[in-house]
Amino acid sequence: MDRIACMQSFVRAIEMNSFSAVAREQQTTQPTISKQIAALEKHLGVQLIIRSTTSLSLTDEGKKYYHYCQQILETVAEAEASLTGKEKATGILHLGCSVLFGQMQIVPRLQAFMRRYPDIKIDLMMTDNFVNIVEEGLDLIIRIGNHSDNSLISHRIGTTRRVAVATTKYFEQLGEPKTPEDLVHHNCIVYTRLSTGNEWHFQGNGDMIKVCVGGSFQTNSSVAIRAAVLSGLGIAIAPVWMFGDEIYQGDLKVVLQDYQPIPLPIYAVYRRSRFYPAKISCFIKFLAEEFQLDPWVSDYGAIAN
Image (cartoon, rainbow, N blue to C red; front, side):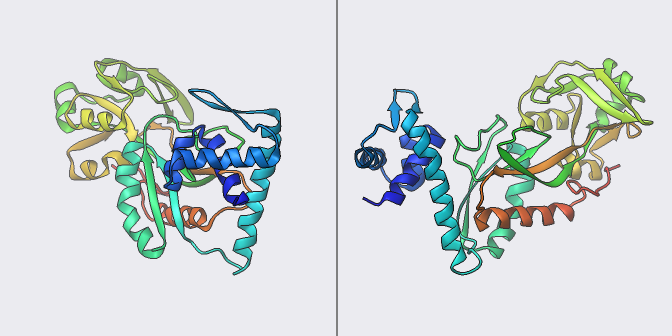
């Protein structure tokens, strides 16, 4: 029995709540993972996992052993890395991000990253749903906005500046809002995953201005927000990177520039550990450097006019 391999399968099974998911991750079969954990239980003489049709749960002995396995596996990784003094940037980086941000800000940069680190492969999961980094087996998540999960580490890599934007044709037909309060007379496209819902927040003259908006269309999809704005349906509060090219080309117009929507931080989020694989640190450093050169996501960038 390869005890380290069995420990790895045991820890990942609990993190992912699935033998099958671990099998896919390790490119093996579900029965193989099940046999590894059964071998551990036989070796230890205790039951570690209680299996049901929908979930896995730890016994009291399993909880204690799981804690020690995490420490052991981290120590093994540190020991292997210490042999060369510097861990080689290699392996599969399991990365998560939102759909449109991935399409527009992550994927276009991957070729440059892979040229720099040819031994790293990317497994990218894009979704606008909230993602549990442990359950999904991810190494790193790129998140927009603040969060309060103390079990994770957040490294700020940029800023999402937002604008009030619509097509020039829309404003020609319905006029431009001069103050945030004017938005109540417009068709506002609401992103339902925004933490403030249909209450849009602006900064102006040192004050916080909150306006409840409404309209004929709302959605939980950033892709749909972009499509709705470009079709002329109404006004949206959206990241400037979502429409940068169209703004500069004059197809879209930014309004209420004296009342800026509150910008949101961009974080690289990963699990707390005493050891971080080089593939994680290399990608964070690369993305932070890339973002600081891009005014649409840089901490120092300017709002498009």
